[in-house]
Image: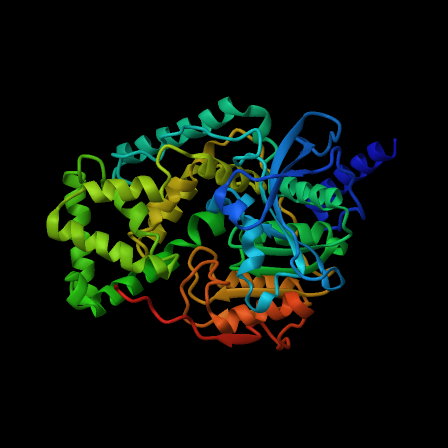
Length: 501
């Protein structure tokens, strides 16, 4: 009977917290323990991980109702037991695929700072290898799609029909699951994971969209957060129509032009133009060419943009995308482009896309009048012609989504003693303003900025200034001194730009 009461209290507290931002209960009782065993993934095996599963309620309001299964992995602490600091959970970014392998995060911290923790990664509900999985139209991200840039009402209707078909398929394939893929559901799952591990508090490490799960969990269960690092923060005041559909477009466009500058500075390698304007001219010529005749009969302007727009997110992709760009200009050979698209976009597997949409479409309401979407897209397109419409259509299934949207949690971190925030000032996927907003809501937080950096979720990638502060926080709880006002507390220089080799 005690477990039943706990489950009901948990569900009621979650519902109240969703509306008011009040913290959740002191404990949760999982229905089943985690059963740990050997991993099958070679990378996890090499990293010394254990793998397991945990049953959690499909609907946390009905704790003894239908159960689903979360897949987890764990790398146990390497330090002596007297130095052990508890469990650290990596919070997966929905767009990064399965989070199971993120138990390896601890090994990336410098100076052995991760060795004093058990590191846990998990695949959020709906994402393989958790069961059930959500998949809507496996080949939705296919070749030869209609041009993202819709210049006529007829062209726009083609895309409206396409995104409606996707939303309809999601509802048909997993109707019960679709209503329970909000961030609050995942926060309740995380609370069940904590209880199943038998610990009173969790240490959390989240990046990009995973930061929003960290923000929500810290709001609902503040007493269960010991230390929390959030890298590249979602803006909790912009969930999700602003944050996902429109706030990214102009920063992505700006970062694309920074890549053009880099290509121009290496014109001796790529021969795409010696100035930004010259590279832009070459870029536009390729788009025009692909609109007339897709490369290898498959790669049109959509596929080209989907691949090349990795560059505004991650500077590490600049050389490989520069080579692909230059090779196509030089040879007109579309075969490498087709292969690259299949690899980078996981052609034929929309599990990641479906789950990202299932979360953002239901965490908060979206405008119910398509004219607002259209007008916002037209206005944004004037500033960001290469990025706006692709982003609009990527999120447009939310207009037709069949699961009811909730009311977003009023994120606040007043109950969390400390937090370390990290962000690059030109981060386009989660613009820097989001980290400033989170800092304002977490009075115990300090913010490390990477001034002029364009990477999303770029920490633990070799920037000593940033990574040493994350390591120090995990090792001792030390934070940079907090400054007054709405600003970063310490500034780091970005990594050098990549070599074109």
